[in-house]
Amino acid sequence: MKVKIIFGILLILSSLLIAEDLLLDIMFTNDIHGGIDRYPATFMNPDFPPILGGGGSAATYIKSVRAFSKAGTRDNLLIDAGDFFQGHPIGTMSEGRSVITYMNMIEYDFMAIGNHEFDLGEDVLIKTLEMAEFPILSCNIVKKGTNELVDYAEPYKIIEKLGLRIGVIGVTTIDTEQMSFPDNIKNVDFLPAKEQLQKYVDIVREQNVNLIIVIAHMGLPYDPQPAYDSRYSSPKKEIEERRWGYDAQEIAHEVEGIDIMFGGHMHKGFAQPWEDPDTHTLVFQGYAYGSNVGHVIIKLDKETKTISGYEAPAINEGVLVTLFEDEFIPDEVIGDTILVMQKIAEAGMDVIIGEASMNITKMGTGTQNLIGNLVCEAMKDYTEADFSFMNLGGIRDELLAGQISYRNVFSVMPFDNQIALIEVDGRFLKEIIETRVSGSRHGLRTAGIKVIINRKRENFNRISNLLIGGEPWQADKIYKIATSDFLLQGNAGLALLTKVPESKITRYEQGLRDVIVEYIKNNSPVSAVIDDRWRRDDSSPIDPSLKKELEE
Image 1 (cartoon, rainbow, N blue to C red):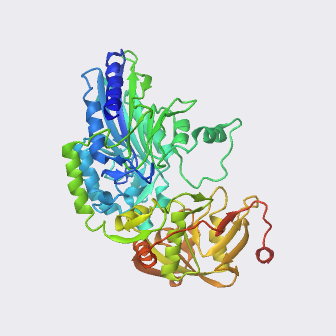
Image 2 (spheres, helix red, strand yellow):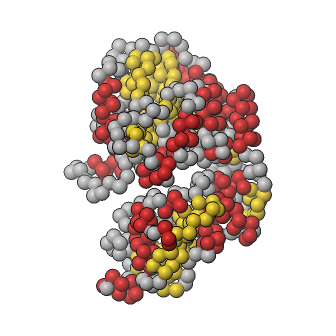
Image 3 (spheres, rainbow, N blue to C red):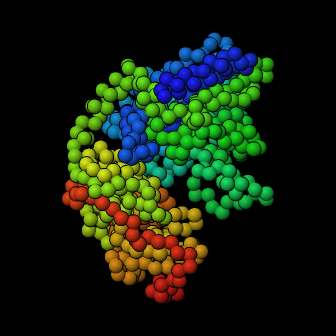
């Protein structure tokens, strides 16, 4: 199987050598999140997961592609669209240095800055990026209160390959402002991506370039065509309120002059590019955690020096090459180097802390899933709160039946968030929930409540029934609510939490990850259930107590 797949890929690559066009192999990654180590792909098969080879397997594939470069007719680029280190222990524990070491070894050409680059603070990021032997790009991160770009990133670079001048521009999602701790980004501003990209596309076009590539830490919608139809139907629908930045599809459609765009941020890959119907900008995007390398062969007309087409070399997967270790034997030098760095970063992480009696997965219904319910129960238990909640995207992995190690919990909660308790009245508690179901927002992971949501009702009047600790909600009662310091900073659309006085906040020194560890230790074997804590019923009448409060 392995030999057949590699032979098939090489056959496609070699057959293109006889083409009349110039060929540019662009290999791309995004949202690596420290995933340069070997790891089992439990998301593919939790019982018999195939092994992904990480950076070692990626190096094998990248080198095989580079071997086909030929002076004057074929060349290559290797780029990354950001979020490079925070997620796997080898990335987080080394503050990103291990990932940059790998990227230097395999000779990346460019990397854009992602939102998670700021998770350990700007000072840490700057020191880590100083190691990079390749340009770091972003055209919209500026020093606070100015229009001066930060010193550790360049807006664009112009390179020459195959006799062509190629402009490469980087951009970072402005959602970083709503997804990062304010203290970590206190010295920077994120300028609007659309305006900044158009500015720099125009600047680069004036320098006689033949091709413009944008590396963007922003992603395509999960379902690109329905999203496009909704946005750009005739007549064009107006956006009622833009709380988040532009995504890759909007940029491709609304910024003129981009030939090719490489996105990320969404953790969803696409086997084929999205091509904007009007601008014909091609948008490519891979999956996350180092599970794949994207690869597209851009065909360029020798005479006009413009794109004449593209080829996808991967067998059965379009432009995405899944890095199964048994198909791409890890490069010995790079694989061994990663293993050494991994052992240093992960000392003590395989200590068993408990066990699970079942697969505690991301599968669920509505806002509930098993792992989310377990995490919220752990938060509620530790703080003795009435109610606990997490944002939907804050929990990143699952726990499988059997022994649980600290490493497993790290995968569930890779971010260094702290747990906190606030004391507020029932009106404020209700407002938290209403905020997270207003508009198109979907809700929260929770424990300690039973709530029914009617989404046919108007914003901030969608709760039709609410129990706290099994008792009817009371507007004037003071409730104890457990959450993370990340959310207390107003992230995930919860700016109202910044209004809570510090005198009403109890901040624990315990990290949220360690709270989960303690819960598992104390309750093994752990399990979780999907119950009636959160339910949507668009025909549900409003509870009399809630209706009375609204009338008052």
